[in-house]
Structures are given as structure tokens and as C-alpha cells.
Length: 116
Image 1 (cartoon, rainbow, N blue to C red):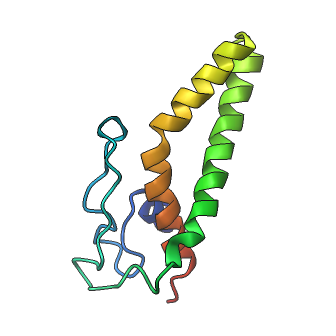
Image 2 (cartoon, rainbow, N blue to C red; image 1 turned 45 degrees about the vertical axis):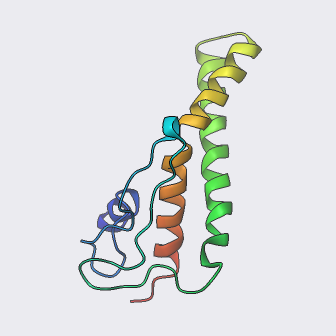
């Protein structure tokens, strides 16, 4: 369970104490999260090679699709809203969760390729 918490909290896969990101970003100010190059606690390098986080883009896509499907089911079947309102809600939630998806997808990607 601690690994899952480390992924969600964007902690270092090596020590579990250092932060992967120095800031969380702000979608309203068009500011993406700033990623640290190395862990402040154990000096673990997060980006192994150039283009390492290309695969995190697919993880982010999967997270966004899962969130969209969950919103669709919730608002279409349980709340019974009109199709246009459901589409609008899904679009707004997707935009609001974009910085969260960015951070978590990179954290998942780093943890997937961490070797003990």
C-alpha cells in the first residue's frame, strides 16, 4: 500500500521521501507542474534518458479515459442529465484534472521502471 501512496503523492521510488515535483502547477494560470531533476533526499535521477517520459503520455491518456467513462456513467445513468450537459461536465472535469494526470502519470511511469 505504501507504493501506491508514493505514486499518488509523487514521491521518489528509491527512498519514498523526496518529491518528484517541486510544484503542483495551476491549470487556471496555464502553469504545468515543475519536475525536479533529482531527488532531494537520495539524489536519485528521475529522467533516465532523453524521451523517457514519452510512455507517460499513454498512461495519462488511460487515466483521462477512465475519468471520462466514470463521469459519463455517473452523470448519464445515475443523474440522468441531457447529452450536452454530460459532455460539458466531462470536458470541464478533464481540463481540471489535467495537471493531476500529468503528475500522476509521470509518477506511475517512474515507479514502473524502478528496479530495486
